[in-house]
Amino acid sequence: LDSRIDHDPSLLEKLVRNWAAKPPRPFVRLYGQHTERKTKERDGRSENTNVTDFDIKLDLTPYLHPPTGTRWENYELCTVENDEKAKRGSVFRKRAPGYSSSYKNLTLLSTPTITEWCHMYCASHAELKVFQLKRKIIGFDKDRFKKHIERLVSKTNYRGHLRIEFPIQNEVTEVWNDCKMNHWRQTKWIYAVFYITMLWILAWPYLFLRTKKYETVSSVWHYSRLDWQGKRSYATISEDQVFNIWSKAISRAVLSRRQGCLDQEDLL
Image 1: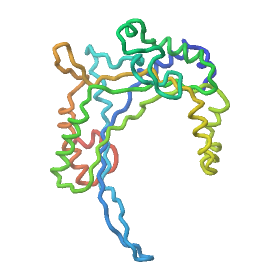
Image 2: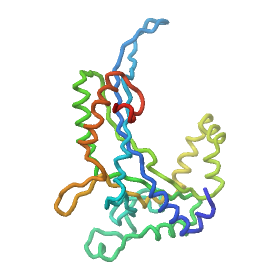
Image 3: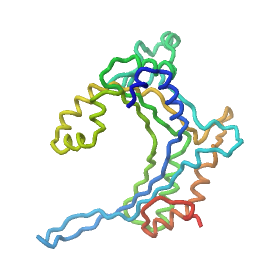
Image 4: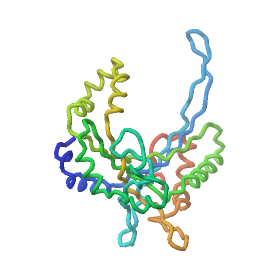
């Protein structure tokens, strides 16, 4: 919330480029649970209760940064293509105005640059508007890594329910325009009142339909790339190598019913 950003596209672009250089924080999360049937002491009724066996996270952020001196671009700043559905200063996702799948229109329409999107945001007279930068990670084979984890946990004879996720922290940075409504939205006591009194049921549709969003710029971080010969190169090491480094630590964490994030001490 800064009134200067609302009217200065150059400042907005400078900030977005600075934010884009800050990496996302990708994790692998292993969550195991089983169900137990317990009897209540009061009425003697039985009910199913979910019991957490382990909840382990592994930070993959270090593997996005190549060693100093290597010729590897950490990230690239991209804007949404005309044929992609996105919020372009709108409530709902849509393709670029005037876009058609015909070859003729594809050659006539150029994809707006980050500079142009910043100008469009600042020129908008919408009462509520949001400019979003999203950080993405590509080139990481989640399915391959997930299969490694599943086989590893299976070898520990774990019989509960295993869930493997790939959450990302620091994924989105947003700029909200400076107005009373947005200040109210970030005031804790007002938020609490709306939540307790259930007024959010009425407020949410209003805010959703009134807020014009620009979800058109992304910072794309490459875990790996394919060259012109189809050979894959990595920013640091491959998914298999990451797994080999951490497999023993993960196995010990599962067996010890660990809850928390693994660190370098777990490798000792």
